[in-house]
Image (cartoon, rainbow, N blue to C red; front, top):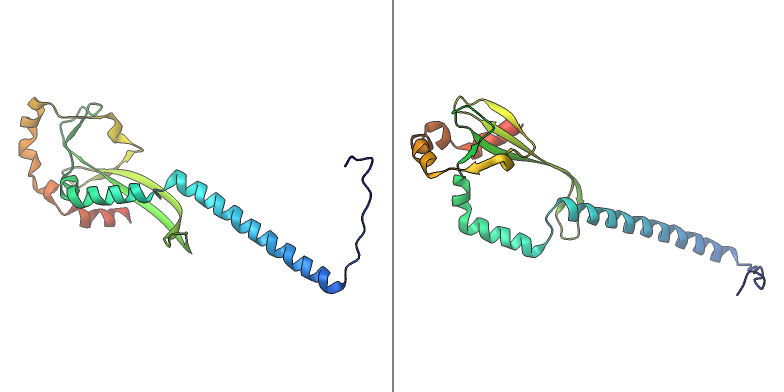
Amino acid sequence: MTADTMQELTITLPDHKIEYLETMSEYIAETISEIIDELVYNHFIRHFEIVSPLLNSTIDLILERHGELMKRGAVLVDENDPSETPRMLFYLEHVVQDGRRNRIGDLLTISKRLQFVEVGPDNSFRDAGSAPYLDYRPLTESEQVLIESEIDADWICRDWDAVMPIVAL
């Protein structure tokens, strides 16, 4: 049909059918709004959270098999720091969730951020910036000999899993 051949069509409906159509249009509008909310949520989750079942299973398996090794951490060198005082780097994950649940039943995360914190032998804490580890490098063989006495120091062997949640508050 072209614009020239189009004609106006008038349909007269009974009141109960008009009410039905109005109710249906409200339902459709709500459904579309929910679909849009779900699409926005899924877009957000894909970019800011891990939702892949395969990736989640892989991470769980690695933590199960090598969790203790990962808790021991690694010794790295920050060449941008001229001091010889050792320090430990921790990351804190801040998550805000609301009461709604996603499709797999987990609480919806509405905000998530990481914070890196360093602590020294004197138990002083400081913000380490956004991703300080990117500038760190592994120890050389000659440096490994130098840090052997520090590895078993009391401040390093402390129960940091109990301390860090308190620091986060």
